[in-house]
Length: 112
Length: 161
Image (tube, rainbow over all chains, first blue to last red; front, side):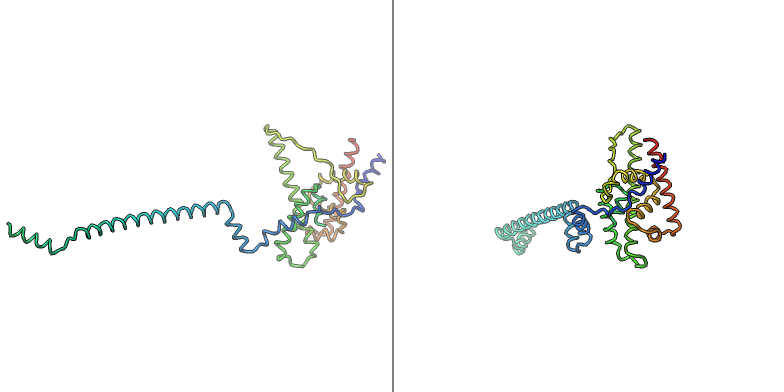
């Protein structure tokens, strides 16, 4: 019993004179790396935000959608231009003037 | 001093490094709120003790959850942690210090923190009081109770042996 008490006292005092524990070799390198994103400037933060997969994919889809819309619009415009030019060509080929039509209508009346 | 305090409370070197890093990150982020009415070291100790005790609580919660899930069949292999050996303890006292740390784990949070700050960092009761926002008398009371509880735990350990 007495032996135990003596040993317990030794255990309770076993930390006396202990030196401070030090960190591992890469502690400060890791800490610096951990602090880096917090201290980065606005540009780096913006680039980081754009580089996020969700943002990048949404951006890409938007660009594709805009491309599609522009191509469709272009096609429609070309089609209406083609129609216009064919009407114009027809008018040039067969010149129909208002005067000549008026003559036809007078003749029709006299015939009656 | 931060790492040594955290290591004394957590008793796991890798976890203690992570928590010490968290302490420095918090210091970096909130240095503007430091009013300077206490010593910088006191402020550092306070953050270190709070973070270390939070980590221990989180770990204990996980352990309890592991036990509960073990009862309901989701049994996970529990690893028996090796005895903690503080790197600063002299070789002659290594085994005794490991026994002391094992007993220290079972103390209530505040008693544990007071014991570590006093024994490992050598802080006087007055400074520990400033760190923990308590009076000197309260710290002395906590120290006395910590020593008594450790003695009881060690008596049990040696009688079972």
